[in-house]
Amino acid sequence: MTRIIAIITLTLCLFAQTASAQIYQRPDDMEYFKQKKAPTALEPDSGYVFVRLAKSANKFMAAPTLIRTLTDEEVNAYEALKRQKFEKAKAKNEKRRAKRIADKAEAKKKRVPYNKPIPPVLTYDRFVIEYEDVSNVYQVWARKEYRKTERGREVFFKLSPGNYVVYDIAGVCMCMGTVQFQVKAGEITDMGMIVADAYDRGGQISEFPEIEAFSKDHGEYRAGFPYAASAIRPATPEMDFPEELLGLKRVNADYRAKGKMPMFFSSMLDRLVPMPGVLSYRLDKIIDERTGETIE
Picture: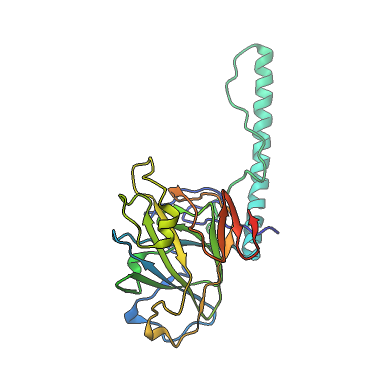
């Protein structure tokens, strides 16, 4: 079965939904930590993520939204419910279509107008249901920081193990190219550092070289507001890490390129700045640097 990524919020469908900070609800399995209440042990069945959010010269700081790829069991459960509801809806659709078609034919015989629309044939692929049994959208909040640093903020949180896609950064969908990584149970996955800066910087050079190289030829977008370019710096030994957490098992995120995605709920779309050895681009094509192949 082809694995799919679902967006599940308060009102869910597996297709496009409009979401905002006002209606977003944190999944039950997501828990933020503060430095004053640092965990002394890791739960063997839970995953943990640590990420640094760098602050730019104009004090801009970007946080990501992660989407957990649904497991086969979750997809099967959804499909079973969708199939059940589809059969009921299909029968209702066919009955309504038949009546409208008959009524239209009768009206034609009587040479009287008939303006009621005939419903289109309901197909499974275009059938959408609300589904609230699974939450897999994890919006990271900078204000729920583990601690503040001179460079910005660090966020540390718990969530379910699984494969996670960096879907959105600073409200910009990474729909045209991004990365994914695995979060395993009983260990901290270190995402490294997220850096972001506005494309339009009034002629100033960005302090982040990867942002400067990626965005120097861009100007302010016609929407009339700054549009952020974002990059992920994988974790390195030089990156600061809280001393009180050093005794806990920690691994660096093993990033892999991710193909194009639908724009579910972000207000803008772009692509992640190229990541050496992981992600690059050839015009609008996404290149998996591990294999050199184009991915969809």
